[in-house]
Image 1 (cartoon, rainbow, N blue to C red):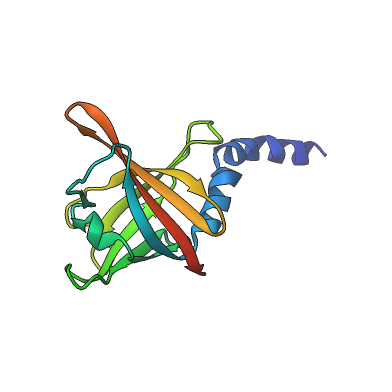
Image 2: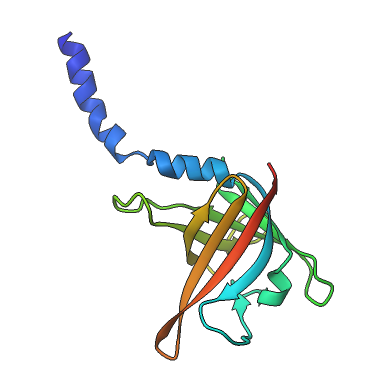
Length: 159
């Protein structure tokens, strides 16, 4: 009995520092293929926005995204004929949210096909809404010293 108690005490730090259940559930829910239906902005108007230092928001609309949680990799496929088409690769993670059960970020780092970063640059995005069928990811940037939010709205197409 004494050994069992000591084993329990020794494993307590490992249990308390592990990934939260909410993060694990979110990773499982993200698994699969998603279609980026539309991109909207917090302010009315027309904007020339380049996302992830890659392509315009118009090019990303309609793209297919895949999240693979077992190795935190993924890709998106730009198919619009007016854009530079093809698959882009990234690695992603959901960092611990410092005790909050409602605010989660997703870190996305563009890579090459072998999942190696060329620029070592990544993006912190807010995981605003996630269900089995819908996903909203927001990116807040500064425009003329004021926050400007870009919302990307997805629908799950398959696992």
